[in-house]
Length: 276
Image 1 (tube, one colour):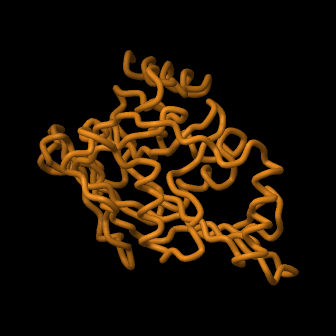
Image 2 (image 1 turned 135 degrees about the vertical axis):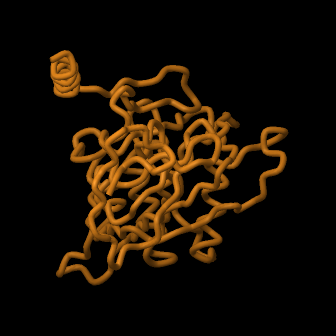
């Protein structure tokens, strides 16, 4: 299988195509370029809790009144330089989270989740003209994380001794349309983080976000350019002449170069091999 589609192939030596290797594969996901989307800012959304202790106390109150808290978050995927990027929020220049939040006790799961996504990312005023409320395509549930007790730890399973977990968080794949307008609260940043930056990076992003590359590995991707043409497909290593990096899309004005020392050594090695 080639990473470059036949219409975009420029080599005089086309690759040898092996037999099909897509048995029992879920539907291919089409990703659109980051440049197709418009990003803005809206009014500040202050945090509900001034501290972690206060947040856990509110969780306990919720459990006493309504039972287990239901939380939904979305994995929004686009691409840049033919590499998947995840849209996520950064709070206080330190804390990363996916768009979404806990559902109100009376909410239907999907419709309540769409309203939560609107609260975080839907535009307002003239920027939102032509956009519909709750206009989100909710895809597969990719993961469930469980909070056994009123503590910060969550697990991708329910421990054997736990019969009444306090919270269940679901991560859903959100299929982005070809174009969309998104707005982020002024006190947050909207980032586009490449998959390779998340992979095995629990120290920076924590176990839930760093597991996203594993969750998405079951899918094949088609990468579409601004003209609507499929120019690359899974498997792909991206274009070697472009260095992917985390980008601040709204709420900040600087791109964050996430290349490590190992990345730099690898780039230098490729340049030496090219020169030889």
